[in-house]
Length: 380
Ligand code: PLP
Image (cartoon, rainbow, N blue to C red; front, side):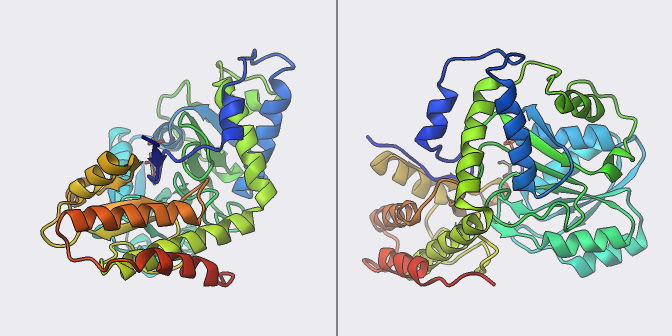
């Protein structure tokens, strides 16, 4: 059976990238690798829209995020996490594990964090850093990081952003928005296999390093080594070669064009879902361009939808996480996606829901998705 990967990470990888990943392994201190390494580090700065160093690790997104915690946190430091879903909660746990005094501006899953709330909270209790999730992949909400970061900066806090599922899909203006740390992973909108994590780090963050123990993830040593292309440890050279090609594809398309494509993919997914007569869980707004979260119709377990599209059509979509497991399913649309990846998902969901006896509108969703994609004007 033909297989389709439609989750919000890992995501499909273009054949050119797979070919680069599958090329013979080269030595990481040889001229076979150094130009590739240099290009990737340069391209990452372009994608993150920063003049600062982007530190690259053989790690998942969580690993790169842990580098931020290990480098910025001293036990007992006050930190504030803005949490509205699974990943916000993960960062609460991680900061707590490092001994930070963690305050949490907590919202129900599916809510959109508000800069006014953040301003108020920081007025009540100062924080060394504010930890934000740009795209909360568990709910489909993309936060207004620019506004949240401005509120944090006003209060003199550093800003750390989990952009794991958003970098390359929606705008993330690291320098222009004053983001001190932006963390991402290779396996989402960057169109690579899993295994590379990155952290763009500002001078202000480097000036505020904490005392937690660290070795593999030590930022200062990593930055120094990267500046002479002299990696501290053996990098996953094959993944770096793949990332080089993937970032080339993204920059050839153009970041703005990629952002617009993601807006249109999100519109298509939401139009298809609504035409089926289903309720969205993620917001019905253009910023929600990473993953579309959908409530399973009453009486249907979303796990059965996920299983159904997999068993019948070889399609992998995502179940809800945490308390929403069984209640919502999530259609991914970041990275190497076009509108037919949306219509394929929508059509499969329609067939499986009909099979499960759900009351869905038949025969209109694919057209609605195609029209929403085609009609979409440029985002504001
Ligand atoms: N943060 C967000 C928003 C994510 O979507 C993910 C991945 O699912 C992570 C963090 C964790 O990344 P990884 O699974 O690469 O550790």
